[in-house]
Amino acid sequence: MIRIIVADDHRLVRRGITSLLKSSKEIEVVAEAENGNEAVELTEKLAPDLVVMDVSMPQLDGISATKRIQEMDLPTRVLMLSIHRSKSLVRMALSTGAQGYVLKNKLASDLIPAIHLVKHGDVFISDELGDILGSGC
Image (cartoon, one colour):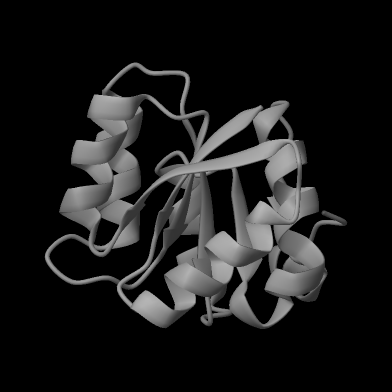
């Protein structure tokens, strides 16, 4: 079972992601966070396998929250979600410790496969971003 925290500042988006993840028998959503600070606190408390983290959130953005989670020395991995296709933002997310980057318009097709790859140590980047990064990911 892959234990996940879903972090997004929009409740409807969080609920949609949680509903999508419940369709997989190998995934359990253990908590939801509405901002980066809450994502960090819940990660420290629950030590999930993975945090599905929105890039843009109030109080503490997803990039900064990812950096704090990486500093905890937990085996928790982070998969970033965003509407943003900026090359510099994708690279910044990966350089602070995120192991993947999924575009929100690709959640239905990319999220569950991305979770499985990231959980097992691989990097996942939505196909639409492959050219941006100059990779075939």
